[in-house]
Image 1 (cartoon, rainbow, N blue to C red):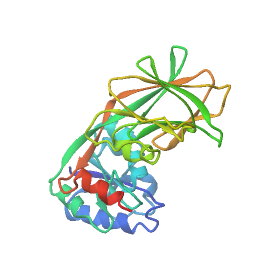
Image 2 (image 1 turned 60 degrees about the vertical axis):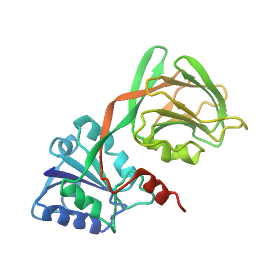
Image 3 (image 1 turned 180 degrees about the horizontal axis):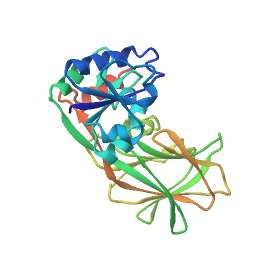
Length: 282
């Protein structure tokens, strides 16, 4: 792990103090530091390298995301494409996906000294389909969300391998991985699923019923979600929390396990259940 790229969330590190601290630590271990070319004017001091777009991943052995879970989620697709492992330094709030905090970089030191492992996390693939034609595809590490873009409920039907699994009047529906089980799905009453399990979790958002339940589904299944456009025609697709597109009345979405997996760095001092207790104790 000689060539290390830094992805910096400038809204979390406005004065670049954390970034400069990380750079100094990496330089102490004689690592080559790569940054996005957009930061060249703000962090242009000797010994740094700058690249753009896919070039960052092509030139890197590892990526460190400085920010929070959202910063990591913005890097994972390219990281999976190039099989570049990702680590996160938490400058945000919960930071379930990060492995070190701004005020405690001991886990980063362990990584720099070679004391780490790499986990390959399952991803989801969402296929926007009309008839039998796949119009667009998206991949997600955490979750795929279909919901109305207003306060009005939407009418949804979810099928698993061609069999109806649920019909919902709800604000929407979430399909998440085990990694994403501690994100929006958890807020909507979904289960916490250990990150090492490959599965899909289907969680309705604010269903208008007393008997709706989350469903944990085999990773080899296909989930199809269709909406009734006559009930509400304004339905949006979100991928890992970011808006992707508006769904049209003749479209539905198929969700399967992606062929891509995200390599994420892990250290043995950070037990999964310790993280759960720490992040969800308040």
